[in-house]
Image 1: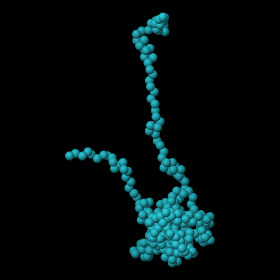
Image 2: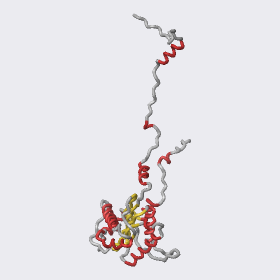
Image 3: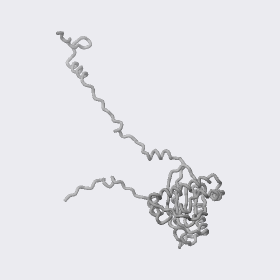
Image 4: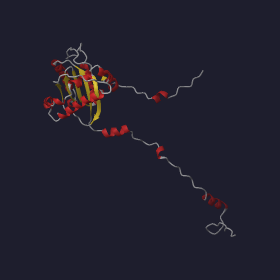
Length: 275
């Protein structure tokens, strides 16, 4: 058998002992490359809330609220409510920011409002003040009895890119109360939304009129109003179980709240017991 030729250096001379070991190290296994998992790296991630905020940033939007309350069937009381709310609305920096439509229907009333959320909360507070008797009026005010019954919040929704109403005015329903509608837990939302939808569509129908012509436009389109029965059933005693009172709504949506995460209650850990 032929023997393997001895390894030589580039100049033809046998390699030194150190050089031979160098050659052997070069023939050793290559270093293993580290595998980097992209998903395991700490990266900045965008939440769904941040994405929505980016889309809405700089875009005009309004909130909507539908409230109801009991009221006596007296034109003088209706006029006083209208005057007080109109005077309060004129004190706003931007009067046109708060728009809507108030309908008096027999012994009930339903009020549709649109505007910035904080402004709707202020309007709701004003309505609640009309449900309280004024015994010791402020300077420039007069004592008066409560003008309306307890305020009931029927519907509240935010982040609408289109305003449906224009200006603000009131209207007295000329319909009469007919057959009473039964409200239960399984149909309360449907009955409420029916009234909300009619009010919304009616506001949109007269939207293109000048502010001075809006009351006449509502009167002309009165066939689109919710019926007296549809309004009254939402303000009855049974319906109180299905909708927010002012106090309940204020506690959930308006009042500041203190949020404590469960993890904060568990850390730091309590010291070990010693006996």
